[in-house]
Image (cartoon, rainbow, N blue to C red):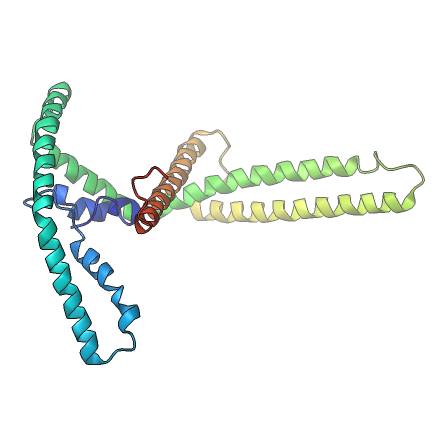
Length: 259
């Protein structure tokens, strides 16, 4: 079983397979109990790192003995509070679920099918077709090629007007302006050549006789796929950072404070 934030910090499919919500008979337990126990016992390392073997065993045994006593003491309150929460959730969410099932024309048999469809979808994301990945990369290269052409054109325009702001007769300033313009043009042209070479390479991999037109049907199709991929990547990174922040607040005993 895994905790509720496991999907954001690690893997959505892992949570779908092992979250207590989807495990028959698992109830509404928190999960990751062993990790909590081991995390608390890690604090012993600093105090007994130079102790003898006997004293290490003694400290570990005492630690888990007190751990059990503390947990048994808190068990009654834990069961009582969670039982009340569970009863309230069943009453409240059961009513809401009935309304949604009626509005969406769903039955209880539809929900396992939704989980199976989500699992199938996530499994399909693990191994995207290589040819589609090349096409998505090709679209990004076409955008980069268009940008490099614009930069080269801008550099040429700047070179043609390089002497417009130089005082007439100041040969040193004229030479410096011409040299700077030459450097910018050569740099822009080198970048353009690299972009054209990469575009030609991908065209060869895809077996294209001519490159796709920007705004064309094939371009728009895989442009959307590229944008969606970047969105999912950014969303996953954001969720990961949120979970890291929550863990940091938890370690500082500041979780739930609105920080």
